[in-house]
Image 1 (cartoon, rainbow, N blue to C red):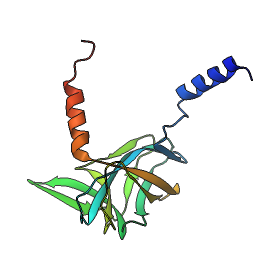
Image 2 (image 1 turned 60 degrees about the horizontal axis):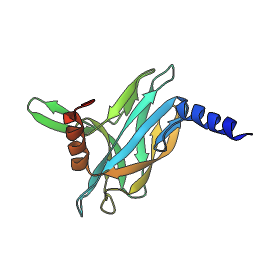
Image 3 (image 1 turned 135 degrees about the horizontal axis):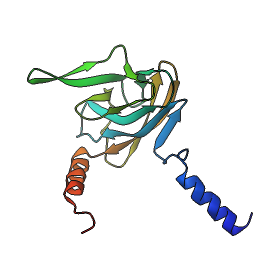
Image 4 (image 1 turned 90 degrees about the vertical axis):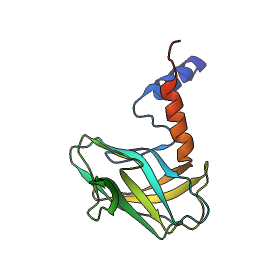
Length: 165
């Protein structure tokens, strides 16, 4: 293979929708984008896990449960307003990922709850956990640990940027 062909092949592959970033995962018709967990203060008993789950298939699936060596339990939770009070509850029937749709797990909404964590989650590290779906089965993910305050500041600063100026 000559050098031009090699470079052209690499360029085409990098533009291909099938090429996923190093931090995206695929399980059957499910695409899991950028799983991350919140950094925690020392001795915190829990952390949340977040991501976008896209279902490219023709039938719905459900995120049912998970497990991780670093946590006593992994549960699927929802935070929602009940009047003037924000309440969190476990989704004992799992979280539906609609056919042809996506669900965003994010702070203040749906999330994976790591309960009884064995050590502090520090910004920049990764934690492996397995999530289990009703139809697609189980997949091991790497959750990047991120400082939520830094992420919020980055989003606010990015929103204030002037493009093209």
